[in-house]
Image 1 (cartoon, rainbow, N blue to C red):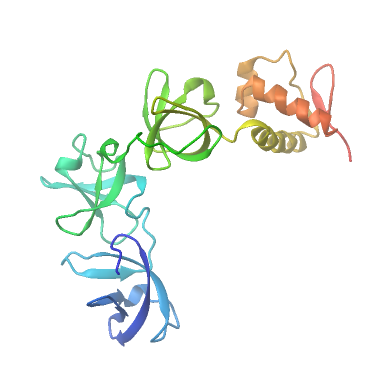
Image 2 (cartoon, one colour):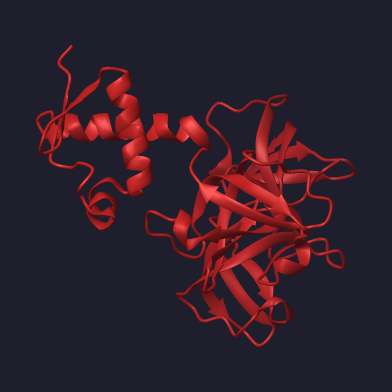
Length: 276
């Protein structure tokens, strides 16, 4: 079965002057010459993305769109009409956002966070800004410390609402943010807790895995600064954050772990790398 708006593996049925035809379920699908890999032969299986062209015909491409059906991505508007807006999604034909699927009138040149979907009436790929209606916090299968993929959705007084695994909404509190973030950013994180159908998340990895990741960062910074850094217990949280991009608590845990591993030594004014 052909999956419109997704990648498909299809065999080359025949060659033509303007490309090759791929085997579909009940029709042949054209892959234009400009997208045919060099040396392609009849019978070869190709990975192609399937969508509709401007004449509503299924067409294949080896180009990679910025997202497929089900993905939530940040795309730039390139033009608008009374019916909707067109966003650049990495293909020759832009993706359409109907006016009814916009939260406010889109403006060319600006980026918008949208979800790519398959329109049930037309069978064509489209995009919507009305993402929340496609998400649910019922039947959450996540548990504490589970790794998750996050998309920054909107800012609030307590932090950011984030989209968790393209399926749920969660909260990333300001106290758990130690680097600049913006709407549309894709981040790696983990679940702090799930309670009353609400998900609290944090960036990075939980527990000592995070310490180990930050440890590699500190060792790299030591190497880049001749094996010595003038930061210690009396350094302010702001100084630690500005240089290391982490909280003072994480800094103390990480340097303590590196000391136990005999990779650093503390001095009166900072710490230094242990020569191997």
